Amino acid sequence: MLSAKSLFQEILDDDDSFRLFCSIAASGESQGGWENGRIAALVPESERALAPRISRHGADEDKHGRIFNALLKKRGLEPVEVPPETDYTMLLERHGIGLAHEKLKADQRLTVHDIITYLAHSRVTEQRAAEQMRMLRKHFADHPDIGKAVRMISDDEDNHLAYAHEELLRFAAAGHGRLIQRILRACALAEIRIHRDVSLAVMAHMGRVLGWPKARSAALAAGIHAVYLYERLGGWRRMVTLRMPERRDALGGPATTAAEVA
Image (tube, rainbow, N blue to C red; front, side):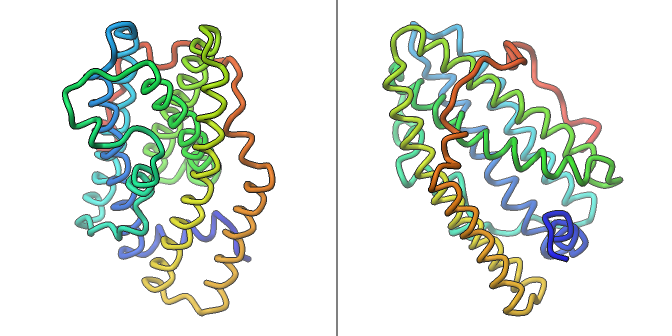
């Protein structure tokens, strides 16, 4: 029976597919770490109190990248080049979601509008990340090789999502509510399309690596398209609602280390 658990187990069991999976994940997390680090350095003076939390976000993303590389090292594997069509983070940036890298590479202070854009981008993408990690945690939390990594990353993604909710609600209370909702909606609608395209690309690569029959690849592609249809018809709304999280000040302390995983 085809299920998320059996699919990931198959990827986990094969060195080549596991290497591709970890390489894609490590690349995206490392890119997110760089982006957050630059945003923290360029925060406007009026929002300097936010800088440590953005830095913590970036430190967590960097840690996740190291964790995925450590998982490869445990199996004696080297990272592989990430196919561009599977690079979720870069595709989001190229489609104008979040802050452009040209802006982040400059030394000019960001604006409040920029910070709201960053937080809205985080609200949407961390929803996706948190959901994916909860799925992996459900099935692999006790796995002897990846269980610790899955639990740690899942906790971090939940913190990132809580932080985005709380900070966006603070800006909404300050009078930016309409701007926030407009950016969230645009970001969510773009994200679901890019997530579909990246998922199709990743599954196509995995299918070639694992030698899946055409019928299985077609069934997985149909499932990805069905998820996109659900999200396009209304599922995207879960990515734009804002509520005060149970975890308050989720990024207020120092980042946890990856020592027990790496």
